[in-house]
Image (cartoon, rainbow, N blue to C red; front, side, top):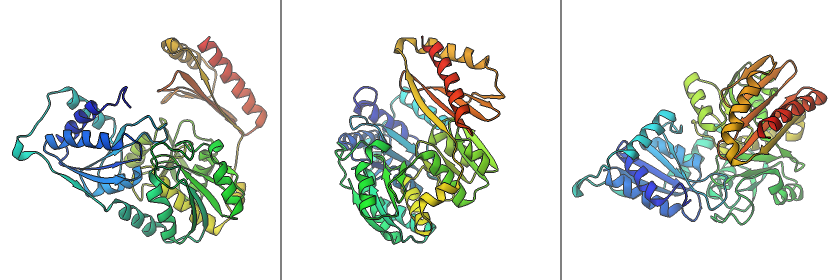
Length: 420
């Protein structure tokens, strides 16, 4: 906040959105700058003649679900990022995020002439209190019920007002921690990484719970612990959900596990990012989508990644089976994930050298839709240039531990040559 996303820019975005959509619903996570940006957006929207509605402090999937009642949704959030960050995400009435073409249109309008209605045609501002109930009703209607004992860690984020209530409404016995919204995220980092979940782990074990659930700042992500307090990675949760739902088609990013290819008949890979997963699901009618980062999209419900629905579904699974036992039945392959930083000034050089290195590589298949994924007979590795930081992300996986290490070593050598 304050560097690239400012109140001035928010007013311009609001005017751009308001010139295209007549009724706009807003939500925000608890970040301290959220209300400031809300008022900036509303000023721009109403000046363009749109009616603006405030659904309050709610999670992203709750806002996306509420968007069904309006022409457009605007979520003010920086998701899992630190508290000083903020931004916005735009949603269609079907719960899908704005695609590239829609975002390009908004950006073009921002650069064009300001549109202001006369005094008697300025839009109105309203509050709308139906978002939380609508989302919980959707979850309960789809899942029916769950009798699991759950510990949920909301991270002092927006899920505090929905996730514990949704689980209790389903029939779960719930212990919640960090469930007081606070824009400083005092309980733990807003990104629920494994090392941040010791309190959750202790409570799962102490309460003899069936599972633990943790959300990020805005609730589009979910990670989990099994009944022993063991961390379940996003990769494993994607595989678990695909297996439990019995899907025949799935959309995953290029850095997702090859276990998915062995479990699901039709696998479509796309660029990393839930927006791209959503676009593929919507375009091709695919049954389920997910990412190792902890986002899961259930298109029968809507096209927004929903960590709250995912947590509720996992509780239902845990009420019928021990998660550790179920996961033990699913394949797991050795995998390594790492990052390598370089000097910011070398970015263009690193990008061009990586392209040369990977395009000359001897492999069975090279996928270049997002970075470079090299596939071999019994494994693969991917090297991706981060879009936000000066670093290369590396993932290597194989059915064999020694082969995974060999692939990782080969990838690391390429990275070293590109960044030297």
